[in-house]
Image (cartoon, rainbow over all chains, first blue to last red; front, side, top):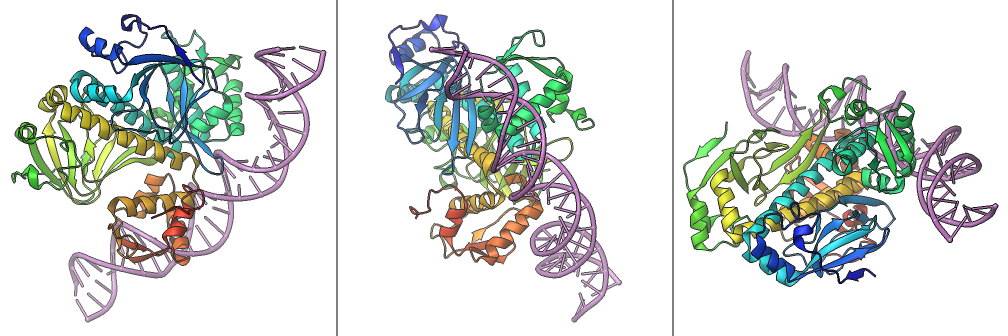
Length: 242
Length: 242
DNA sequence: CGCTATCTTGAATCCCTTCAAGTCGCGTGG
DNA sequence: CCACGCGACTTGAAGGGATTCAAGATAGCG
């Protein structure tokens, strides 16, 4: 089970205060949210929700990484979302969830009770419009990922994935700092629609060509960002090479 | 260019009145929308927007079918959305669009001017919350499609696609009525992350096995819904079905 | 220091793609 | 009226990129 945290973090110190559902709320609106919120923490690899589960909360990720996956009857698994801080789970008019949610790293959620949260969405435009905006951002990201899943080669998939990691969890000062790689190769395979062997082979190829280097299994550094960009297939002149 | 339609359809007669962005609006709110709306029609195959275009409107599809696609530099194309009546284009905080939008059939859009629409989203909770809900529905659908693109075989992709058509554009009285197939096999291939040859082969296989039959190129009938459900990979055993 | 999860690498296989050569259906113009 | 042309679809054969199967290497942790 998850650990309920009595500690009631003050919103003004919250690391996702200006990116999450509450981004545009004033102090009065934060008070309303504060009355219905609670915190929960999960360990790495811990399941949070199963497909079909009733959603007791609308939750925001405060820290850590979670995955959204769907597994077919024969075991084939596809990750359909990588949830990072400020990403959310649930929504108005949603009693249950369609996917499995799993903590990938140690995780903290800020959760709002469903019923009163729905009322806030109904009554507070700052929350409803921010939620719409965030859902549309996620929708664009999901559609971009559909291009990767449907049309990119294994090499392009890996390059795009590494690029995304650098952009989303990398240090602002790009190449000189190491990037955290929170996923195993098996999880990466499920994210990219590949097998773990193919992920290993492509990663090794990038290592051999000195495009990336690994400090340990969980940390890598980009040595040649241009090569990575070219390999991702998203670049105009990327098609000319490779 | 699109044809501007002077005809000002009354919202109360609108075919998508209870499914679109305006679904929860009262008459006063409809009046606000009415003041900033206009209608446009497009011919089949006509481009509506290109990737990167400035979005002058937030638009709802009133009738017809449109596609949302992304094409890579070397020509590989992936459809990332099939827009049917009540689906929308645009959103608050979106000045431009990330994908190409094309009319697949003759199409009618109901469009709201961007700036005043954004103000309505900001001020009218009925609109903001409905928009959030619709965006979340689209997000779930996109994630479901990611499973198809990442993990399903060609046969499963075709079966899932046909199932979806029956559900979304088919007659309520399932098997006895023909279903409209608005896409060419090339477009289907781009939707499913396949080639048109593979689409043709799999369709032929279903035809030979008498799972479906074609009345003409644009209309088919499902002869064996159970076989289709089994082939889609979504059901444990195909047992529980309508 | 050994156990186990994770990752690597090779070889064979397979599903889908690619390339090629048609057929089909329909609107148009001679 | 029907031949023509063209877009859409079909079908076959060859090829290839990713998977599958199978060992083994590595590393993180007790």
